[in-house]
Image 1 (cartoon, rainbow, N blue to C red):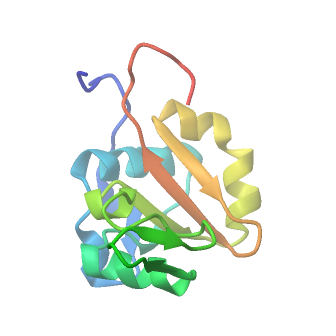
Image 2 (image 1 turned 180 degrees about the vertical axis):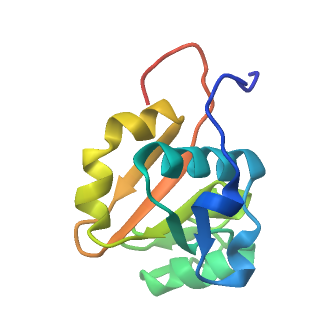
Length: 142
């Protein structure tokens, strides 16, 4: 699979804010796409959670009720955190957005989100929106 270079990108220093300094280790292509989305909609993207190392993902998964069984497989969990080793966060390709009214706003901007080759997972119980990057593979669907 070849990464398309036709997606819009922008300078992240003008459109992306990291609320936690250690979260900056996300994929630079993803970061450029997020900045371009912010530019297109006239907002600064505030990232409250981005890159997670394996141990951080283990803590996140365990906090949702997940655990390892007797032979070391990850089981359980309530679906709000990915199994360690399979999270987009561990690859630097997912963030949690913190914005005033973010769920409603981001859903209204879904066309812009898709234009920037991003997909979303919105949780109804919080003001968190997770954006994932994806690569164009010859189809226009997510």
